[in-house]
Image (cartoon, rainbow, N blue to C red):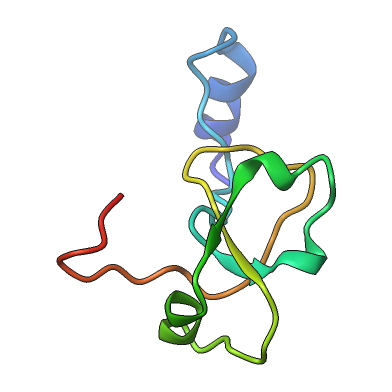
Length: 89
């Protein structure tokens, strides 16, 4: 870690600091609906089996996609939703 960057972080005020480590976001990941905690469910939208199949998931279960920018307690992993020209929301 750069010493200068660390000093900047220590001297920063709330709201203007940047993380030292960038974590990959989990926006728009597709996950099995059964794996979503009850408190995180508000951050997910249902998707069709056809949309799940586009990202390689289709074993008869129900799937949901995580809303962009919504914070959850659990970091969810899965394939990202793919967009074609006609399915922008």
